Amino acid sequence: MAEIIQINDTTWRIEDNGVRFFLLTGADKALLVDSGRGTPNAKQIAEGITKLPLMLLNTHADPDHISGNGSFEYIYMHPAEEGLYRAHGGKGTILPVNDSDIIELGNRPLKIFYIPGHTPGSIAVLDIKNRALISGDSVQDGNIFMFGKHRNMSRYLESMKKLSKYTDEFDTVYPSHGSFPVGPDLIGKLIEGAEQIISGKAQGEIIERFGAPVMLYKFPYAGFLCDVPADKE
Image (cartoon, rainbow, N blue to C red):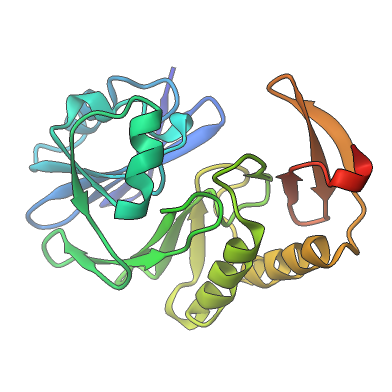
């Protein structure tokens, strides 16, 4: 059962069996950021908190972030993510959001950062006035999934370097997995880890995920689950 935790007067996190999503309210509108792993009633959960007109935005379209999407006719999402969303059975009309777009909730502007790598259309959301970054899966201290055909470590590294240029604009990071919250300094550490993996300097171990072998690179600050290199198979 989902647990609702209030962060401040206008922000809530909903903890859903290892993944979390968020409800933000402004003067005029409310926004769900993702809709959980096992919460097809995500819209009803949000409507139990606020009576404001409710919108939905997805940081990305992995199945543990879209379980409640079916209750929404329109979904904000980066257009590069639609293919993955449809492949996972996602319904509804996509309203595209792109890098640097602003979603306005009423005296609460939210800025979109396009950060591909974990998925083709991954985004982060900067809550400008509250100086908080909602990072999806890309910035977290858990194990970041980077295995499978739609993951791209090189693009992920580029995205983290991009985010690192904006860390003076947020004081805290709200990730979808792992500890809550984490600090902006984690981004620099993730850059170092990704660089070590790409260069072949990182040491990993083969473990099983979803019935298949993957390579876990475990660092003190986070882990990366990657495809097993050809010379390790």
